[in-house]
Length: 311
Image (tube, rainbow, N blue to C red):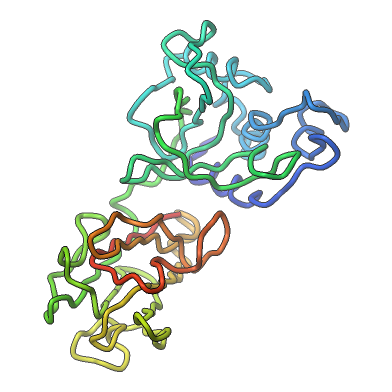
């Protein structure tokens, strides 16, 4: 059976928000052990990964049925599919919370936790979907952003049919800063803006599908959504009114043929305040996993914008 990273991530993503109760009692442990279990010894981060691959009919891609992160990592290493750098979307990622070296998997740290990489970010972090994590006493399924420095290693399943970035629709965008419109930028080939100059207007289009977007004016409020991309059309061609912007919101509508081929995509975007570093990535107008529903911080004008489309 052909299984892609897209399918695995789609299944994992649908579980976000699921919580365990009664001391690690959850459907993932029930599936793994074949009966309802409860107790502090039933951590379920690796069990969640096992469940996701089982749901996809892809348990063979993990090589071993185990609830232990160390043994799971060793299964990948034994087959030459363990990496310690160059992490990719869809990798089964093992985290370490201490600097204790592993004797089970030489060349790595002891694996304390595991998840599935959803994206590799440009700021030295990865976004992953993980089970048995968060502040809930018994754990839940969450999307987490973690620094690469806490990654011990990652297993690389032998996926087939993975989405190639060049086949995906692109975001094309430009901004007005310093009193003039700057050249267009495609996806993450660069950024739109002028360092030190507040962005006042944003124009955005996508190569397939539809998008709506709006901006928040510093000291003011949100301006109406627009859907066009025409710098000569002040009504629906761009978002802004020549005043400094401190936040941006973008939402992408995935067309049916793209959904069939790749699954639903979202606008993934971020901004940087004038003179500062980028804020965290925002997906569409989501408010889960610490997201605000928009990129930016009210009261802080922005001078850089990046947008792409991602699943």
